[in-house]
Image (cartoon, rainbow, N blue to C red):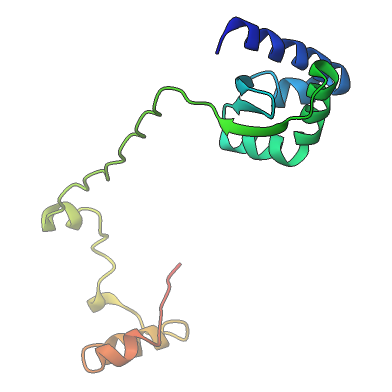
Length: 151
């Protein structure tokens, strides 16, 4: 792209700037660049895919009419994603390694008061106790139907 082409695009942008609000112009046109222009077409680059899609869907006609006002000829307008350095690879997330827990490290986290030997069967605990007693006998059948949740 030569300086003459860049100058043409800057002049077209100044006309577009008068037709749009400042936030709209700054959002959608400020980062655009001209890629090529000839007698029948103009190719404009934008920084992101989203910007290209937005410009194509909402501003193609505006750009075409502005180019016609400035150059006096009808052109087809197309938008492309700006070619730049290849994007950096996103960092690879590594699952944190869980510390290996031994029986000793687990036993200090459990309260020795709460064991099956000291479990009190009452009105609120009778169903879980019956399920625990049936568990060794009917494991496959019970695991698909019951889920017990404590406080």
